[in-house]
Length: 335
Image 1 (spheres, rainbow, N blue to C red):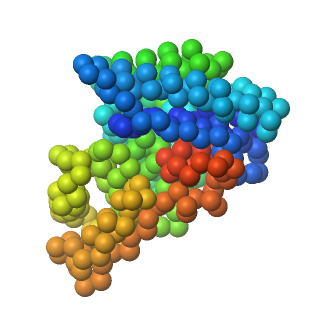
Image 2 (cartoon, rainbow, N blue to C red):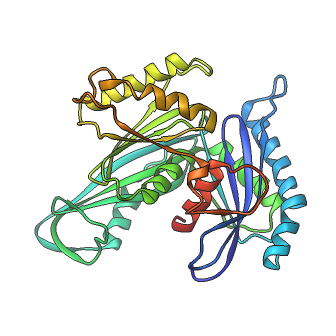
């Protein structure tokens, strides 16, 4: 990031919509200048997505009315340069795939080669829009490599994380955003993809881990082995408020992953403050039903809003909002 930028951050979940003004300067942590979260109020006979878009519009007007003057006082301008929208279930999905490169003789691995393969193999299902497609891992000659381009190899592979969003919802979000803010730079990404990438960058020293994302109504599990994402699964059939079923479904998903891979001993837990302690206690059970071949329970690392002060600075008086903090951190290293 070569200069100062002001960004509108939007987080859309199944039950609420949140927004923030964030300011970025080269060499400094992102700063959240204003944050607000509004519940989605469902009206009788109104589709869920209509309620969400109506709430988004209300939130946007609140950001402009209350947040823009704060942005003006802090930066000298009340306008934003871009908008980043994180979209959760039930309107998004995340997929991973691996693309391989191999030739008879050694070749130089280039970014152009990867771009060509992405363009050729990317498939967007009807009714969906491709929000983001990120290369999150590269393996050269069998070894994970952080800076792969320009190296001579005989085989290579890339792991690609794709965010898909419902076309109708994406169109509605863009329409509302354009009507509120004077910028055409609108970026969208699936919330689970954003949070995965943010957590992996924050805790890059953990080469093997499970990332349990229990922020929204649909729980997802990501398995990282040797710094590479090897599996992403969604935990379906969870009834809101049924904690016992919630834990059982998570354990079932862990067991399914354990059929293919040895499970790492570190679990990063993304959850609302009120639900974090319950989930932590559940994972302290020795062996967790035999999934870990040890009498010691795995190490659970809660990723809470209060833990991210070293990555994002918030000067607002509202309580820290974990999804917005992760979105602010992601933008600094993302699109």
